[in-house]
Amino acid sequence: MSDRSHPAPGPVRRRPVQQRSLERYGRILDACAGLLDEVGATALTTKEVAQRAQVPIGTLYQFFAGKEDLLAALATRNLDHYLQRLDARLAAAAPVGPALFADLAVEEFVAMKRAVPGFGQLDFGLAGPAVPTGVRDDRYLLDAGVDNNTAVALRLQALGGELFRAGDPTAVMLTLRVALEAADAVLKLAFRESPDGDPALIAECKRLVRGYLAQQPSAR
Image 1 (cartoon, one colour):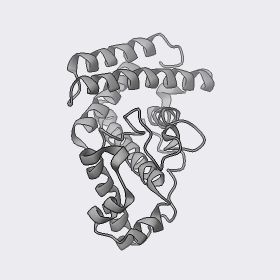
Image 2 (cartoon, helix red, strand yellow):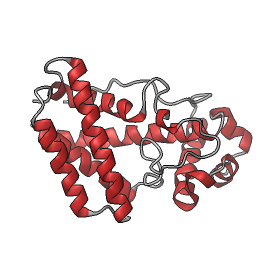
Image 3 (cartoon, one colour):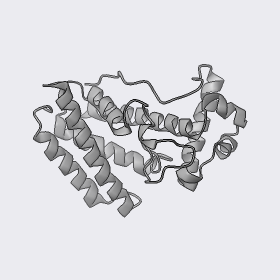
Image 4 (cartoon, helix red, strand yellow):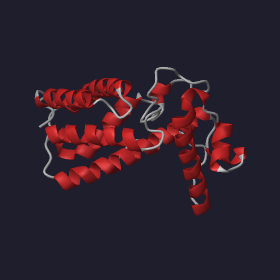
């Protein structure tokens, strides 16, 4: 089912290799996620993240040039974890058609919104409308070359494998981008209505995406 190829991750000054560096890197991202829930993206500072992670500020700057790079790395990790979890659900549910793929993709996103630290503030991009100080353009956190939703669509296309390989690749990507933009808008509304996501709006999101994909020859 899955194809694990994907674009290069977000900007990191020095990618950790040794175990000690990997642990520090993970602690920094964990601290960032926890603080996002407490203070939000606008008030978040690299100094507070370093203090929460119990690392010197210089260590944080060894990995990240600043706040934008830190958020980009966390968004990239969020997407990686989301795709791993979705892949496991797809494997357990096989065979999977476009409708079930859409349902599981929405359900896993909702599950992470409810349970994963920081995911409510920063999933694969900033969830709020305000762009914090120190962030040039939050629409390109995952990949400097394409906007966040396009980057996610590319990864979902790879994960879906044969489901999204019929017909013109440009048409397939357009279908996924439209489906993702629509789902993103409805799910943002669902989580504005309720901290756990309004169930009626989540159900409507699934119905909307299923119906749209069913009408597209590029998704079979």
